[in-house]
Figure 1 (cartoon, rainbow, N blue to C red):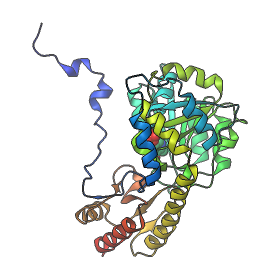
Figure 2 (figure 1 turned 120 degrees about the horizontal axis):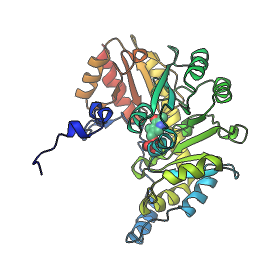
Figure 3 (figure 1 turned 135 degrees about the horizontal axis):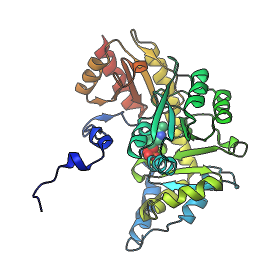
Figure 4 (figure 1 turned 60 degrees about the horizontal axis):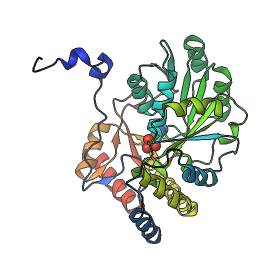
Length: 358
Ligand SMILES: *Cc1c(COP(=O)(O)O)cnc(C)c1O
């Protein structure tokens, strides 16, 4: 037996070429880089959760079907009765399950560019070919280009985030419906930012047999729990369920999500505060010289400056961590993305930004 092996010869070449998903250290920083909800849960709810967790049967595997949690989710999210629900360890896992199920030789996973980076990354992980169709410079859908790409590639699936990340805008609904009608495969609408947008395609599920819809609790205030869900017809979800690892949603996540979702008003009130802070932030940024701000229906704002790398570095010196998207895509040249935080955090961000662009 040799005492060393050549990992380069054994690991898939696509995997060798990947770089690991980088999460920058944020301790001591004002953390406005990851679209997290800045608010803690109310103290009464935290007390309730403490008791639930203390009594949780952690010696047992979780309920593989998560029946109680699913019933609560159906209520809280107004999921149509005729639709099935599949739960994931975050919606990232659901994207992966869908890609795994569709990755026949030659199959294509399509999205737009720039979009959520995990669409492309997971396509690579699962060995399904990725095609990204460029958005217009205002980050709207280029219908002609998408229809041409559908004709050319016959994608097994198209992923569209609604609102889109990293741009923050909602795509035109009619255009999305045209895409759903034109494609031979499924369309997954990723509504990760639904709580901050006044629109949803959930009502279209009953009309379009190839439509699936994803939601997540992450941006709503429960990023640490890791819970995402897929809503769609039984003919798709029965097969996807076979690829879901049986205990992918743990005991604690099931209990805590269930308890929190029984207070939807609390989460909606937090989302309303974030939306009103978003309006303030959009106004403030629009008033700054040499800053172009893009409209947002999400809990973050994309904006362009003259020198994003420098502004990003200066903000960091002021202890403010946002996301530098310069270099991620040609449409994102000199763009930065800031998550809407508490009023105090947003003010500190704004002051640091003023200082860094002057
Ligand atoms: C943040 C984000 C997700 C990630 O969701 P998790 O449920 O935390 O895995 C999914 N889609 C989009 C577009 C996102 O921005």
